[in-house]
Amino acid sequence: MRIAPVRVLRPMAVRAGVAAVPVVSLGLLCPVPSLVIALRRGSHADWGVFGAFCLVLAAWLAELALTPDTTHGGEFATDVLLILLSMVAASVHAWKVWPRRPARP
Image (cartoon, rainbow, N blue to C red; front, top):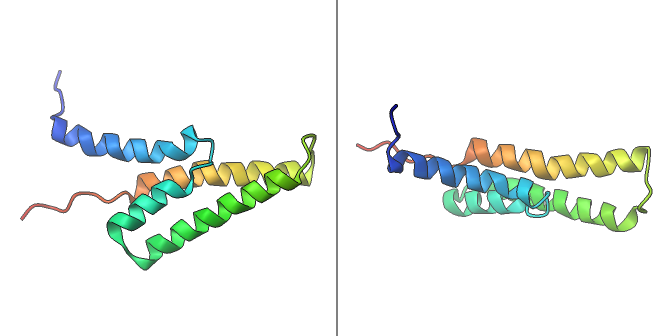
């Protein structure tokens, strides 16, 4: 049995932890991973993704405030879509885009 060195496990653990934030918070912290990525990389596209996840969170909170407890049909489908978008899309984005270490010269 071969055990991976700690320096290999640490970046994967950080990456998994950042990707788990939206799922653990049930979508309420969906902009956090994209904010961390935007702060680390600083590109305009990363800031745009952060803004998009902020809009998804705002839409989800507005839908939550305006929808009654006993919903069905289109309103329920909209709620489920926004919750899945804020959880799954944010986690997949954080997992795929997380900055990897540059290759050593």
